[in-house]
Length: 463
Image (tube, rainbow, N blue to C red; front, side, top):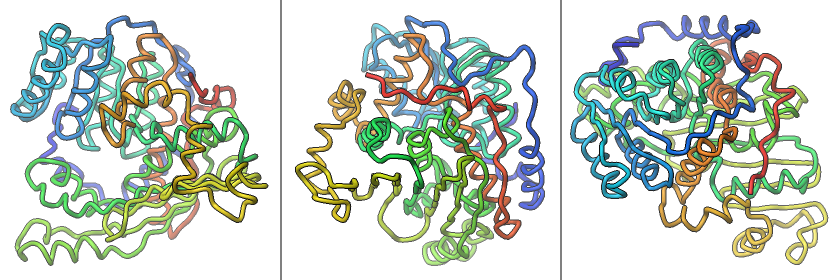
């Protein structure tokens, strides 16, 4: 934990794919007992924090956005910023001070040494820590943050293997500190509206969902010393399966109340295409002796996984960050009375949508969707949407997420995404790897809630 270096992390991962798969399968195979002193965190509400003292670990492209917008939200005080690079830490401090120098007037900076984030936690003891580092750092950083008394908020994924996911759960339960994987897509306007429509029963009983992260990101290979591509490219080479499942899966999982009373994740099968695109791109754009041409790209360009829920519903999850094609998250939920779908946004209900369509054979789409926004926009979007559009961040979803985190902490309410949801959604990566290595054999989801999902409240449509 004390030697995490985003520039050299690939050298520290020496296990073969088969060994990793075996370890993951063993970690998820048994139902682990909860420590008697632990607290189930499904509906946990922490003590109210009137002024939330916030620190940040990692302020590159993503972390900078967190710092600037969190600083703008009432009831926050930015107390510390940590990054390997001094210029990034200073940039984020400047942005926070510009937002409100009366609230954010004593921001401590930590940079240079790769272990300074631990020093920051010990010296500052913030109420909340926002973590935006490479994937392999997520689990140790959230675990240490909670052990030091902070609520932890981390970029996706929560962790990259099942053993670490269990450690995150156990630490959250033992410390009674929130640990939320910040799935920002759950706060998109369409995603919030679909959640509202599902809660109103407009599409009947759930049958099937489709989720994806299809986003051509080969250009990130230009980020060779700093930035996402400098470490993510190595994951494309050594990884297996769906490396980034949560942007598509998070919203549909909450539509379906998975791990919240009604239903839960049960098993998964997975297949990937051949691994061609990254190798071809490297050969075309870099010299033969370039480091990107020395990698052996093992992971398929496109992964398709099928999740079977406890009640027998299905969820198709796809991932492709390589192929030349338009962006899509699918965002589809099929029920017995209708269907809600994204990219482009379109809706069909049995019997038609009043005033627009006569039956379910025609989509409500295009300009007609505005009529449904007026009728079914989520109350949270109605309350915060205008400010979110002004603040920006993936169309405003980033701001709504950050706003809700602070609101829940200040009001002492349960978070919209609990630690178990982040772990279930992230578990698709190691489970899909295991399935692929075993020729598509079904893989059982570990029950991170230890059966408590059955009594966990479903996510409310808050006002």
